[in-house]
Length: 178
Image (cartoon, rainbow, N blue to C red; front, side, top):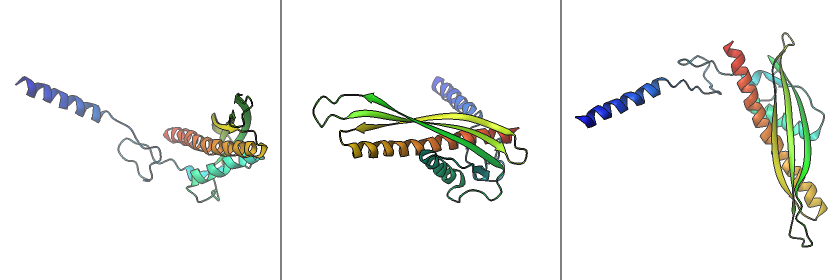
């Protein structure tokens, strides 16, 4: 009898916890509201302003692809994203003592600062900042160092674009709930 009572209480507790769950998908593709959830965030309505550096263009290109699902920028955007990307490179470790097989390590850090503006009013509706770091080895060969640093820069650009996509999606979800 005690086991049945404990099993019933445990089942009741599990059902109560499941009933209180209000998790909803951020990238829901259905146009209607489901349950208590908010409508889908329309990331494809965001246009990204042009940038001036190669690494910022890498971030911008990846972000356009992520926001539009590969369709490119919208013809008549609801929002405009002003994006500023900065980059720094630091030496992490110096271990070369004389042997050519002992590389040094470097880190590329990219910072993305964004402002999301409503195109109808021109007002800033959201802003934020994200940082991403990517490490690379620095062997003794000069070209290998340049290539490794460029590869780390490209990795950081992809990761920064993904981080910015998530941040913009969260900001737009908050805007839609108002």
